[in-house]
Structures are given as C-alpha cells and as structure tokens.
Image 1 (cartoon, rainbow, N blue to C red):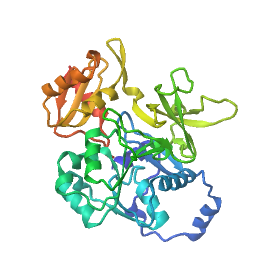
Image 2: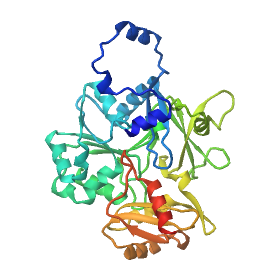
Image 3: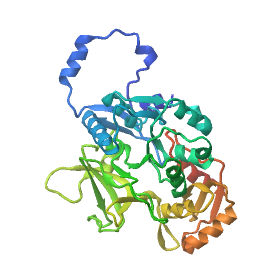
Image 4: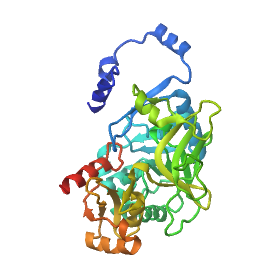
Length: 397
C-alpha cells in the first residue's frame, strides 16, 4: 500500500501482480519492445528509505545494473557455489547484491522470512538448516545477533562471506563477528542507491588499530571516487571532503523530480571541458594512511555547536567503543542547540556519560543520553534518524 501510494503521488501507473498474472503474453508487442531497447533505458525505479526526508524515486538503467553486478562479483568473489541469505525487502535496491549474482551464476538465494529477524536464535537455525554461506546485511541485522550472545551459543557455522554496509559497524560488534567466524571473509560495502548500490568495498585482510574506524576501502572497478573539500577542490591526504561518485554506476536521477536531480547529479567540479555528471552523496570522508577511503559522517550531521564544528559521527564512534554499548545514534535539534544521544546496550546513562567525558572534549559531550530497548529502523533496516530527531525535539519542548 505504501509503495502504491508513492507511485500514485509520482503519477506512475500501478500494475498489481494478481491483476495481470493471467493475461496472455503478446509476443509481437514484446518483440517490438526488445528491438527498440537500449542499455540506458531504465531497469527500475526504486524509492530511497526516506530516513532523512521524503522518499525519492531513483531511476537506474540496465547498463548500470549489469556493470554493478559484474564489478561486485569480482570484488567479493561470488560464484555458482554461493548460497545467499537475503535480508532486505525486494522493493529496495539492496537485494540486487543477491538476486543479480544468483541469475548470473545460477547460484542460490533464500528469501529469509522477515519475522525471523526478531528471533536471532531461530534466524541462525535457519542459516544453518539451509547451509547459507553468504550474507549481505545491514549492520542492524548483524548486531542483533552479536549483541544478544547468539554467536557463542548458536553461530551460523556455514558462513564464509559476510558483507555489511549502509551504516557504521560498531567496532566491538564487528570484532565479535570476526572472532566467532575466524575463517570467514568480511567486506565493508559502501554506496548509495543513486549509484546503483554499492560503490566501494574494503576486504578485512588486516587487523585494525583499537581506535581505527572500519574503512570503506577502494572503489569498484569502473567507478571513481572524488573527495571534494569546501573550496570545491580535491581534498588533500587526511583532509575531510564530500564524497562524489563518478562512472557507469551513477543512475539517471530522480523520477519526475528535476529540481532534486539537479541538486545531487552535478557537473564534475574538477573539470569543465565536457559534460560529466557525478553524484554528490552528502557523505563526508577522508583517506587514511593506507590510502583507503574512510566514511566520517553525513554532511547534514555536521553541526556548529558552542562555536565548534562537530561531526555527530565522531561522537557515535566514541560511544560505540564503550563496553556494553551495542548501537548508538546522535541527533541535534537545532532550535534547542543540544546534542542528544540514543543508544541500546547494557550500560546505564550516567556510566556512559562518565566514560564519554574521558573520550571527548567538553563541547562534544551530549546534553542527554537516552537508553532504548531497540533502535527505530526504516523499512530497509537503517537507523531512523529522522524519527529520533523528532523525538528529541518533542522531548525538549
């Protein structure tokens, strides 16, 4: 119903499966469509999660989807022996990581029942029953298993490839997974819907320092990352800049929304000799000493507080190192000028605040820390920051 309402808002025709499944195929019309088809025709329109605003319909073409499939499979090593356990609903772009390689290789993909993600023990039973060896999950799905101690009691013993993304993986939870599955390969994947799916990957082939964030690594083949500073120039080594994405992966734009498309799909700021559309992600990043791209925070989570420019992601990263903290999210209701932290874990707010005073300068300390039983999530499993911001605003009125 939600997707039908969105389609109606955009003026898209709606075809329901139950209404069309019994119609006979019209071969002549299908052949005419195939003859006229080119690889820049849209393959789909998929809606963003809307976690920070109104969902937008992203139109991706066949060329982008095929290129993404080929480069993803080469980077991560999918093949005909891969057995996927799908976590994300099919009306998002995330299942491309399972569906397209399955078609390409004749691999196997299980669509895991959604309700199992509420019961981690039963979820791991399902993974073991079907001998699932590969998952490409959002971080919240992985931390639900590790934070409840299931990895020690009932580990998914067939997993050999674990891909994660969409959010920052708390280091303590990441280490739990690495310790529980020492022979598995882990990949951090990064990329927006507007670039067809994932654009960068980092293979966990080295031990990270205690205070080192998990990198997003290097771009997939045929993809270029531009890191642009506030002056519109290429960011220097170690300097924070906005992540721009260039290449075949860049989608066609937002369906029937030229204004928003023009804001995000822009001319490459580093060259003006010919038209070259790149995507502004709104994400901030930097390169570490290994030459790997590191996600810093969302640009819209960079705030000015007490005369200082602060990345809310840095506060979240610090809190995630505190023993007993499983998930954390910081918001900043601008009208109240307060940093508010929400977290899930075993530590009490007063104890957490005490630990943060040892990790952060005074101007970065949250004014309040609220302990939650669970984090609110969007339909595709990401943190619902918009909802938490609304809650923080209402609580302070």
